[in-house]
Structure formats: C-alpha cells, structure tokens
Image (cartoon, rainbow, N blue to C red; front, side, top):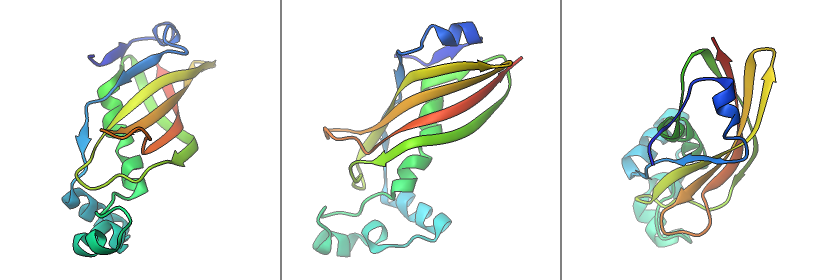
Length: 154
C-alpha cells in the first residue's frame, strides 16, 4: 500500500473512521538503542548491556527504550500520510499512550494508523489518529496511542 495523499479538509474527511495505512517495518538495532541512551542519558542496563541482559533480563536480550519506540512515530507516520496545501503542521499532543510489550533489540516494528476524529476549528484541522506500533511476529503491540495533529490548510 502506498502513501496516502491528502490535499484538503474535505479529502481528509473521507477517511474518518477508516484506516489510513501501515508503514514499512523498521528494525531496532543495538546501535540505535545506544545512541538513544546517549541522547537521553538513560543508560539503564536493560537497554545498553547486552551481556548482562542475556543473563539477567527476563527477556534474554536488551530492549528498546519505550520512549525510543515513541520517538519513531513521526518517521513511521510520514510513510503513511502526506498532507499537502498546508502552511504548517503542529504535533498537538498524545493521549491514551500505553506501552504494552517490550521491543527486543533486533525486532522490527511498524505503525498502523486510523483516523478517529477530524474537527474544523476556524480553518485549522484538528486530527486525532489512533496508532498501534506493531512488533513483527508478536500478537501484542509495543504501544498504542491517540496522536493529535493541527493542520493549517492554505
């Protein structure tokens, strides 16, 4: 499935209550986890010490930071949807965020998105998108949340 292209509020409205799409899979590597630890100063061994995690962790492996998974959402989101004819886009918020399942290093994740609400606020489009970060070969997702965006159409 290709990227969905939206050019106006009325086009957006056609997808209300529908799935917008699914991103490609992205592999979480130990290098990426280590760089995230450097950026956030979160060096908890469950994320960064592969040898210790193999021996002591209930998962038998290092796991990605929950906030690393969360920070991948914009990258995966842009694979699903392109909104044209806007002056500006604002990430307005995240609601109902729940981390459901740890993501083991070397696992692959992808984003699934559904448009749950669309409101025209005097020319500003407020979109609420329910997202699920799926883990390849796992039934339970890494996380689910409602993302809020403000699209300022021209």
